[in-house]
Amino acid sequence: MDKIPEKMTAIAIVEPGGPLVLKPERRDVPKPGNGEILIRVRAAGVNRPDVAQRKGTYPPPPGASDLPGLEAAGEVVAVGSGAKRWRSGTPSPR
Image (cartoon, rainbow, N blue to C red; front, side, top):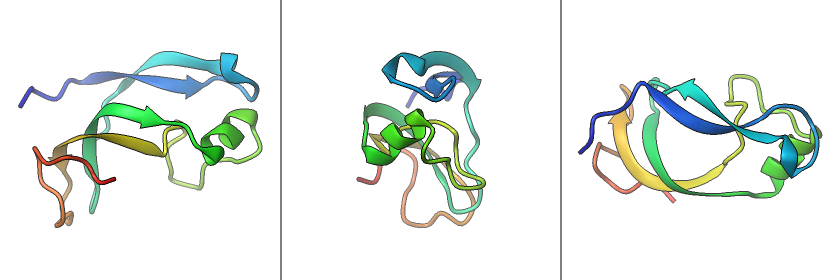
């Protein structure tokens, strides 16, 4: 398994609007918290809440990521304490 990088490219919503408000930006790779896993994303989908968030009509819940991408698949690369179902190297949850 590859080393986890310090930075990642994320697609961010820079302001409410259409698809052109989505911009790639460099961010720190998050560390998984209690009961969380970190996934190296290989594929992501866009669903209705992502589109509503982009339009500015659906703010992320408190404490949730400001990034769209509720649907993603890849490989679990880190596991936070308390996460029991998944371990590094397994396919991500679907």
